Length: 168
Image (cartoon, rainbow, N blue to C red; front, side, top):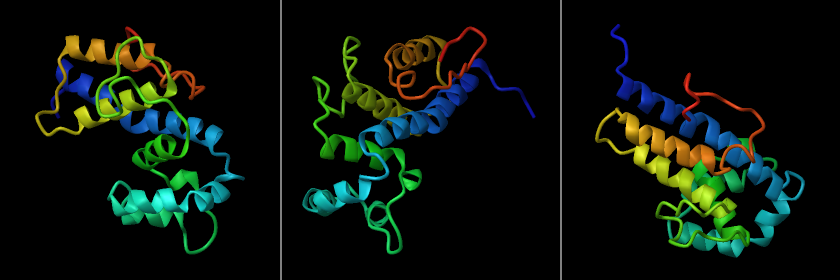
């Protein structure tokens, strides 16, 4: 098997960060805002809001089923990143970034809402089918944006190094 090029390796590092680390970081934050003991009552008291999100197709049927399991209580371990961010945005008073959740927040924005928007933005960028490479300059800039904003370090206690030079 041929070795990965530097650009392919950058893509793999960013993918690992966004697919493995950020969901755990967001879940840690989510569980602090919605403790397991109060999550069922929060979901119950927010039924109308959640139903509106379902009608608008912001929450899909599979996510709805996770929020309303047939047997037992909802379990945040089964929630995906999209669902957790959706609930944080819609069921809390978390402040949205200046340009909203669908744009990359400004570098000076360091609120939890901007951190969540930043994670969402980069995850969506990674999902584009353009290629499986990321140029070094882009990689260093974007990983720096994620690392410098407390999106990971405030919510996740483990420090994970993705390269020898501590990029990402």
